[in-house]
Length: 92
Image (tube, rainbow, N blue to C red; front, top):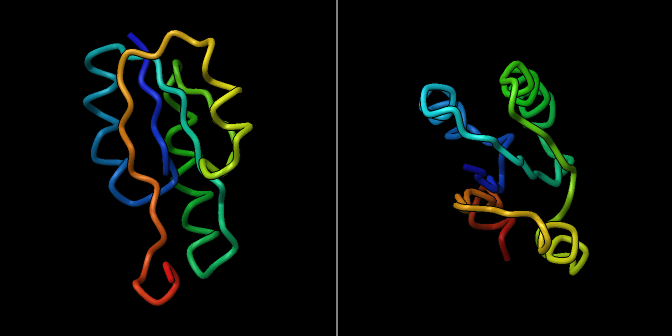
């Protein structure tokens, strides 16, 4: 089974990592890596996820139409949407 995981470099994703490994899911991770204070931390989290054998990463912004075209033909069983802008002020 394949999971499309948006916001894969965010904090909460590390909680799911052990579960994904246990269930033997294939993970397609997406993050746009916005340049903010947490950039270095996101890189570390991505390194942790890259240790997972069935993980592939794409640096894509989900608000871009290319995102839909890129993954439309892939067989994806589940989507876990964790992409967000951290902080209320930034989101406006």
